[in-house]
Image (cartoon, rainbow, N blue to C red; front, top):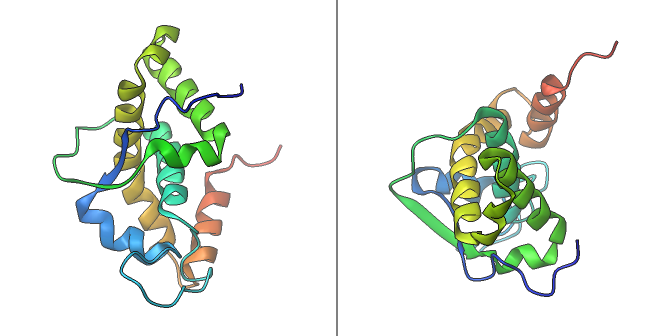
Amino acid sequence: MSYITNPFQNLDLEIPETLRPEVERFCQTQPSGGAKPSPDDSPFDRYIDIWFFAVCVGARRGKGPKVKNSHRFITGEILSRDPYRIELLELLAIADSTNPWILENPAGIIDLANNLAAVGLPEVVEMLNDGTAKPIWNLTDSIIGLLPEPN
């Protein structure tokens, strides 16, 4: 589907404040300045990338309680750069609500996405830290471990 406007343009994308240092550590974008870290140590290019991966991991786990102290890292305008993310968020919301009319409630969709990111982000951080290798390889091993065994 091609979008003329992004339905999430002015809505806040959030991560739990408690995980903000970890997100900053594993992203190459450094809002506080400094040299760009190696992809081996910081495998995610931008906050939106780790957030979106956390949404996907959270979708496997299900919703959790609403995060009380969250950090707004950007607005949904960033989703216009990768329109497939908009479509996936909409599909997740339809699957969660079993109601296609949820598409008329962009704020509800982003609330769900922020919730799923909050649920998935601790597991993503664990994947990055779990192992003796660099974070990129720990993450790779963890993702491979999520895949079903070949027949």
